[in-house]
Image (cartoon, rainbow over all chains, first blue to last red; front, side, top):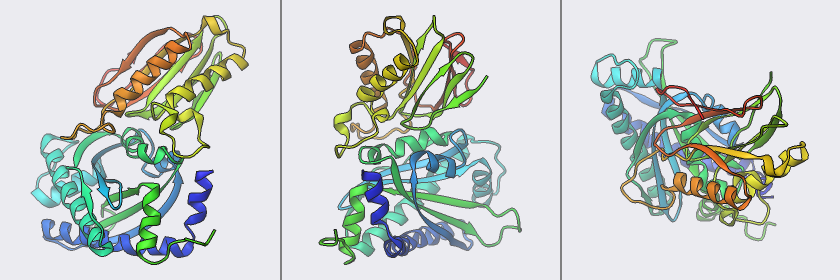
Length: 213
Length: 161
């Protein structure tokens, strides 16, 4: 079964390899956000999560959790989906930091700010991955939706769904340093490579499993 | 009354007085099948239109319209429903994001809806009502007592079909 193979292929060593390359991508995204916000933004936590689809939805706060999400698909040597998602509190924090105004809910201004942040984060994340791996990645123009996390994630998991009921999601949390304790908010980028792309990455880095099975 | 929850690419059958729900349908389609006399309701959360999209030979049947709806039908029949009494309602199939290039993956919502309609037709299950399309997510619930199908969406009134 594909699910089992995917999970088996992702041993501790390869998980570390993925974490390292995504650290480079997310670190670059943090730097870009930092410039935009004119304050220090760090890559806080990076998790490599092989999870069944429904657990991914739970992980993102449950199917009915309302989020603003910027989505892009990338094709090329590697393919997959990337999402920048913010819930209402996170969005309010980002907009306050960027524009100095308090916004309730997802106003048109809030949406355009989120879209802009999403474009920058996704662009810088993928550019760093592409440069480091020496592979061409062609992203679509990022698109915004404000809706239930389940509706947004299930669309993002569709391509992976052709192969498996489990996805390997790489969750990068970016955070600002100077928020008051307890009020710090994080921005999250979810990277969902297509199943075939993992082997491409591992081969490129010399840790492919040809002849291993 | 219990509320049975089905996730992405899952299915379940409920008897009176229980209901079946699935949360946050986007481009996916929630296909509800109902036997009014026996008051048996089933729901499958369809993710993709056709099983020939599956890569590999082993796959979860509930994920695809042309395998998931027949699987739900089998479960309904095993639960005691009568084939020629069954009716269906569907919801979902939205386009969550807009892209400049109209690739197939962008149209997946409407392709899912078309595939569900076609499969129901092939199985001779009348499609009584649907709430499909648009660009918003839906949470749905089918009630075994009445066969009513409730649809909730963010910032919209509750809809019952």
